[in-house]
Image (cartoon, rainbow, N blue to C red; front, side, top):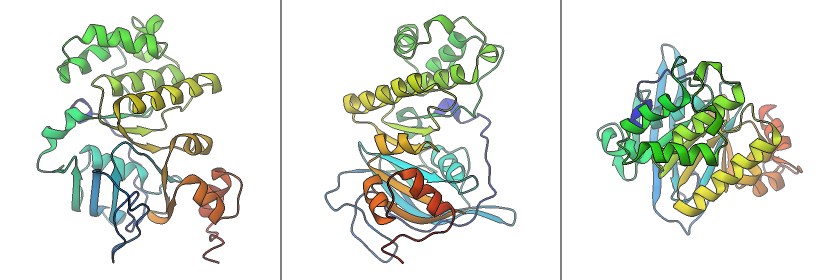
Length: 286
């Protein structure tokens, strides 16, 4: 996401340490837990990643991997460490220590080999307010060196219901409209790795459902890998094969949504989320 490298990232870093988990794949080892053994290529590999802000340790030697073509949820309450982790994956924050490999490349050393294969969507990262939607998307299209920026914008505008908004100033849009523009921006370069922070925030139920379907179809068509941060647990149950649960910066549980629901003796991921937020243990750990 080269074009987002200079963006203002809303980082809430009142977070504390995270420990190791392998999200999806690999063999169990001394560092943590594996979820699947029949794995494919890891798109994201994070090893002992640490970020400290003054006296606050936001992320403390967290390690995980995400396999190609998988949608993985990174969940937790406010201040759990999600935003800081995503910011480091994007190169917007430099880690205090640790390593990030994306598509097998060291993110810190070879960032510009990787950014064109990635993108990021968040309703909390604004685009220039005085530019129109078309102007904003055109700038990002040029930064990604698209062959036909105008055609790509027109296609995404039609797919995401933005055609009537293209000539409107970004600053005049509603929150839900900005969410859709951010998603369009993130799909301009047809990324192989898509990082999604609340991709359906502020959307009405009908539009949110359409966006989820669009993302699912995009993944089926391209084989893209997605890392999703969301507070919408129904969205997580629908879209995600794996879930990492964070609380106060620590990984407290991991598994497929159905596995976590069974483990905590609950009916929905929302109930599981509340249990974890309130420091309740799973039935298997009790």
